Image (cartoon, rainbow, N blue to C red; front, side, top):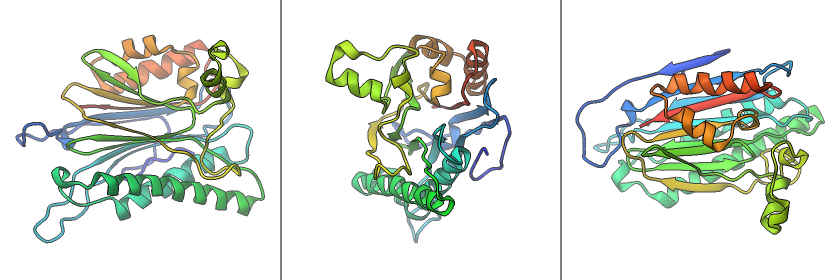
Length: 285
């Protein structure tokens, strides 16, 4: 099941572009951000347990205060080996987006209460966690999913992350990985560099932090980034990073169109084997 909030459901890809003229210096025009997303079953799996969303989060104006324009990008990868991975990823995204629509601040970005927004985002992860746990209880089965999200306002981008999907940020042609993989391999490497994770290591796919599992509430990794025109944000599931190095992803991120970036990343991963579901979401500022 592939979930795309606020627009419609797709089986393969989605591209959206719009532009806004004028505005204040130093602000990113949310309406001018080029976005694209694509998800693919891969070449081996029988079903796609990944979900993604690209959603405009503008809330109605209150009195004389205009609603805050914002954009949400998020991906979720249902945990393989557990029941209903597709339902877990879709349910987590649905709960997370619904919470943000109800509670995200409506103030102008220059007066946005950062602490308040942080709280709303963290609460959204907790709501998603409890939603998946309730789904698991109803099925009498274990369920879980990763969840990585970027909440983009005109002044800053807030990245929240649980699991082993990744968020990359490209500025002036240089790509850096913002997030860490919440896996046993990374945990071992942090304790002892001699256990640095290697490609293909079975520990690289053992999650230590996830949404909806019996292990308890997830620990949410957070980052705040100020975007500049020309920057690019990329979210991708581990089915993609299994086959592409950070250097390869950075090179592909240099392509002109957001949709082209999604297509090339997924097609390259499929050409490498496509053993897992593949999802990429891109925003070009």
